[in-house]
Length: 199
Image (cartoon, rainbow, N blue to C red; front, top):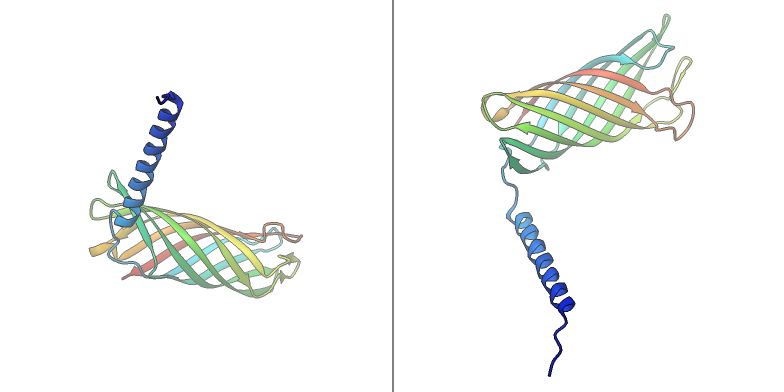
């Protein structure tokens, strides 16, 4: 005659619930995104001004960005969508100390996490990103950045316009520094205007 152990039954029930939850999650992942962005590439232009450190009297930034066709989008909830795409950029920025000016080439790549509205003619979005950059020089006069490798983080907001949201205009605030990998680490900050064509 078998002996019933309530704890075994409870454990079995809990295990079954976990299996059901895992199967449901797997089904959602296999089913793919709840929505699909009709365009997933973009060519953008950025222009900005900011602070490159207390020693510099003039500072400006101009760059080109390219959003790779490898975006992942999911979770349409309450007319909002979430997506991740990769962005590469090449930029030149300038800093001046008195009459002495120097230019820096800046190359970077980063994932961009975007939340956007899916309703209406104009679609607002919010961006967050952290990525890796390489700069061509680590010194402008007395301003020292120590390493050619830099981290870059930005937060931005903007508007997607037109059919299939093909036109983008936005603002970004970007901070770039080496994360104290080596000192001194003066860092740089830019407020940027971004214009982009998506396809």
